[in-house]
Image 1: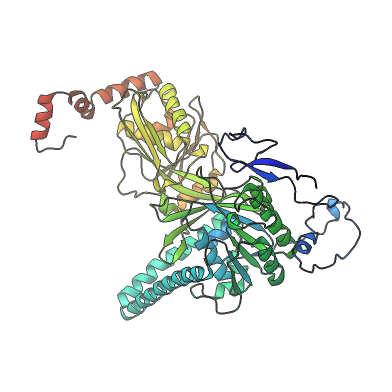
Image 2: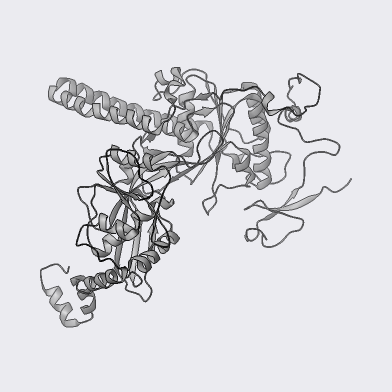
Length: 581
């Protein structure tokens, strides 16, 4: 008997090698190469296609006969009949937004994220919501059936308690006429604002796609026999259950715990993940089953397993969030049926994940307590505009080389903007520490935030407050120019909706009448003059540098740092009851 052909596969990146190395030559990881069989297909047989029944024949199930024994041939693209994509509402508008308007029948959705971020919680809530109208199968490879039921009951009991509290509050308002009138006055603008948000974002009405689901309550465990639970890790048993039950939605939690018995490698390896995902895709596409697959992440933050896993599925969603914060961001990294880089905002509470329809509330600080070093931008995540506050802090350095630290903003982008401010505008920042952060920790990576970053840094340097009712939008070029950005009118409409009055935008990109005072600027220096109140800035960048440097030398804060080595001054400062600054 001939020895089976094998090769070595890296468990980190999926690269293959004919012989074993101590270090992967592709990604550089050590001791990550595992020996695997090249192919499971016996000699003389071909690998099954998407429309083949050989997958189920291998598992002993009786497959349906093909309608035609003729081999498939190519057809003209114009000769293919059009088929309308049918979508179903998940019961959560934020998830529907990220998916492009709802769940597409027969699609494969991969959800990744850090442990404990809320992947299983969200899918359990969605499964319970859809089970009131459709057949749902939840495959758990990490928890037993009792554990899943206990978690579901805990989430739903908390939701019922919250509903009871709301009912009691409504009853109290009915007995108190003044409270009832106040509640009505507050509720009406909120409904109008939500309607305006839906119109502005031009999203499809996902709530109408499932009339039955909208009328049912998501806060009770479905009593009908539509929610099926399968605690199993054997792929053959899972495929057999999918073939017999034919659910509308199936959840695989998680793909790293599923194993193919024909493979000798451990569950979660590159070969296991690749073959299990391929087999699940075969059945899901043939039976028109929507699959939600949970994926683990590596220590670097990427989805564990081979890159082919992300290529096989239709949609890749990634959960982002800080374990010290309650909000969660669901970001679309790939979507064949909608826009990529779309985000949905959720908040983790006692009853699970709840939607946050107005995401700008999380990333926008209070405009009443404005301080220097703060500016407001409008970032676009897919087709969703989000108003974000940026905060910068510029201070004298205690070390030989100044520090540059960022939170939510690319550090390389900060270095570039600092160089532009010093070279083109004349702000002396080379010996000062600079810290930059976005409120709420939202990752802002688009170039449209450049001008807001520059204004925040100069505002902190000059210790002058930027008008809190002004939004700043624009890309900064290396020559100090302000360049146009995409979707400017969409950003300005969101700013006007939240009560902003002024907008500093690129001069070459003048929008129409949107209810805002539009201030066009061509250079960064022009934007600084318009955004930061104070004396008129000199025309030349050199004079600006000299003036700002003199202002800093005359600042009492700088004098304190220069004199802090003197024991006499230190004793005087500490003996005084007045603050140091």
